[in-house]
Length: 488
Image 1 (cartoon, rainbow, N blue to C red):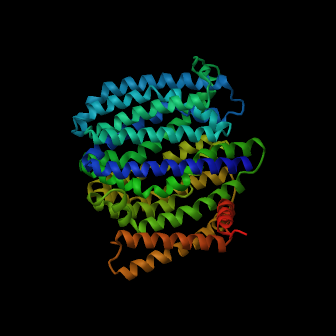
Image 2: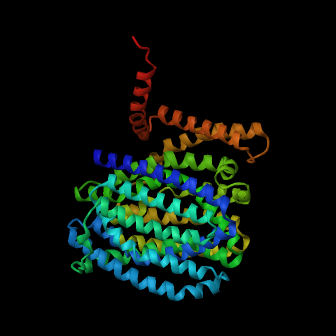
Image 3: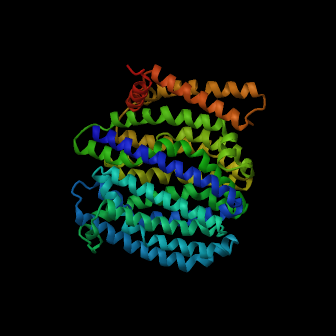
């Protein structure tokens, strides 16, 4: 377990670095580009991300999950990945004009053609990064991810300053993909995996086929609001909704993103060692909710000052959308664990079945709400997220038995900590007397008060995460104590 803890610490450090870079980049670009330019880029990225779900075909998860995985497996994964990438890149270039015409955005055609270049680069980094994850080489993985993010941010901001507009995002993506290949080879110098090989391709496709279909369905669903708002309301509404998503997903990126790279290898290791997955699953739920719930609620309460700082006043219309999305995200706490635990417990096909059951009615709800604008689309999550969580839990409990009482016990302390976290910001809102329209200084006071209340409640209730917090703070406190100790 010490290996897992070290991996979590490394990935958490990476996540905070990446998040800091992303926040700075977002703050700058949101002030340099208009909502329409940002919206155009989001439409293009949404199209590419859907295609990207078909391109990966689960090959990287095949490397991690296969207990007999070897360099030959990585070569097979690369061969399959490159072939699919080449095919889809050609298709994207050929259809770029059709997409531009469909959305009434002529600039979308060259945007998609430039993005297709990144398709041809990703196969050269994906298998290497999967090998790093499989072997818990998270220090090297951190260097790759941070370097890639920094490259993207620097190129994006530079091109935006030079007046490239929406095309800044496309060229930044190509630059980031190039950096990812170079850094992956530096961290895991195995160019031999680029030799074509199809040994074990049936196993790769057996895992990849179901995984890819599930990824494609979920990715298309996640991006459905972008597609529908782009058609119904134009690129500016897409930009507004997209930026609201960025702000509301900060808690996910802070907490869940730190664990995502570790969860699948951890469950896979438990399965290989013959351990029951239920304790690890319930412990992960408790660890996620004790941070996700308070931070998401705090984000909803201080959404206006956060938007002012991160995006600027031209994005204030997105504040209600941020609030709704933040509150809805509290309901999705098991989502990140669904795929890893089902895959590790032999229920890979269940992930596809669960998606086929829950996503179609959810998509219908979003389609009906799209004409009402970004806020109406966001509000549908109070219906769609509980439906998806209920279906996912039903399948998980078939493979990893636990009772609803066990689940309630796992999140009991998290609920108490969330209530405690909300008290200081609610007091600030009440004293301000302007509803949720807080100023930036008021938002800072509310945020600090909520954070202090979260830490105090978690430590006093002795949540398991409190032990990790103490371990993290102990070296800092020892250094401060040594420096403040008077010289003898």
